[in-house]
Length: 337
Image 1 (cartoon, rainbow, N blue to C red):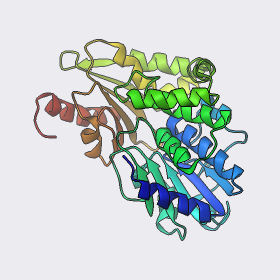
Image 2: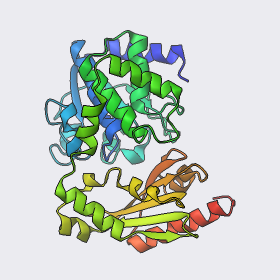
Image 3: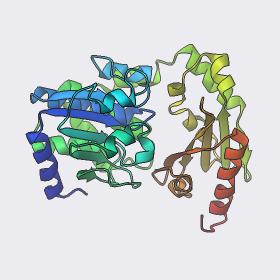
Image 4: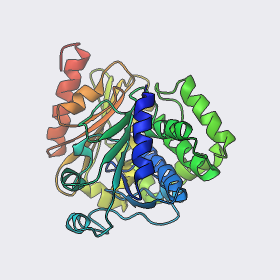
């Protein structure tokens, strides 16, 4: 739970700012996108100059949250140009849905030499203490839920557009309310957002019923690569650079694909390994709760939650897979990892 004092400090930072840079972790997901969209909307309405910046491409199914295309670091602006003021000069930096340098590739250097205060709004346990002020609630279902609490504390109006964005963040980070981070507070929050104008059926269609054929083929390639370990208790899947070439899919098309193998009744831990163009392997981890996958991810400078985490490993895929399986074996054996 976040103290009233921290909310007051955050609001004070926002009130005295005039030009705000808002960003989030690489591999933008629904929570990151929703929180960014909601906060940028309200701050703009309060007369602030607001600049959004993403660190990787926004998945197509979240573009409906933004009126204008958000620049991507490394694609639309170089780190050098950002540091030189290419997007403007800011008197406040807001980081959403992460508190870790490892989740901010290339932006981390800018952050280390910044001259503006930093506000972090997050719900993860992994933390590098990036903020001068931090609104962090590890019990919150999503960063968007923390943003909603800030709205209530500040008495900012929740318009239908803002309600939609925050609902997207919470719904996606709870797996459309089937993850174990869904509690009564989460559902009460979403009820308030529906009352404010969020349309769940339309949101579901926009996100989960708008696959491109390329993404669908990528999912098929991933399912063909499934392997079960430890008597079916652990499932691994992988995607190589060749899979992306064969299907025409993009890296952002991998979001939520790890959830597919969790439909298998015996699977307690799931891991998806994605080969990146630079040879690194992005590993996404999921658990039904018996294994703390955040502890596994932290062994590789990653992080997340007990039931959902991720990290970057050195390749090739088989090497990364074995490294993770070794730790899963220890976890199943109830030995320290």
